[in-house]
Length: 157
Image 1 (cartoon, rainbow, N blue to C red):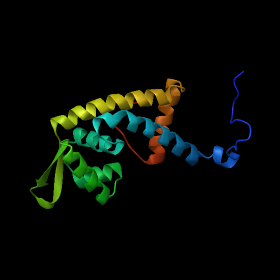
Image 2: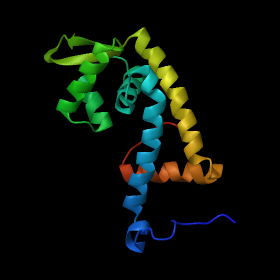
Image 3: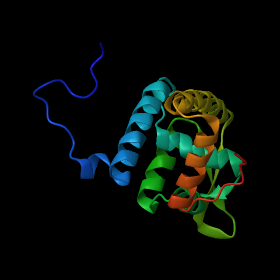
Image 4: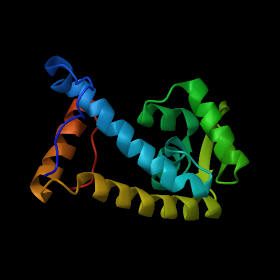
């Protein structure tokens, strides 16, 4: 008979932690992110790179600052992410003619290919992570997380 719970002699999480929404959410996010990072490692990008590439492809010529705003990434981190993506040949920067301090970011054809492959990996990871939930609960979970995060999407779920 299969045992449930930790082996004898191991500590268990206290109920206030085990039942904490924040704790459970962060552990679920860590597990999904770790799985995703392992899958996309072969593309030489991180989950953050994929997020930036996704926004860039969906919004051609968006400024670096605006991408950071959409993804809630601070300016310094955004510069490092774009530097890294540019170094990998996945995006290009163009100065905005009306604002010399601002750059528009565009995906290269290589960047689009890498994003396409990474999104296939993301779909697999998501499917595996949500496989225990029926479709209605999956949609409800995504809608609830969007509300909590204050994110509006145009995608119908």
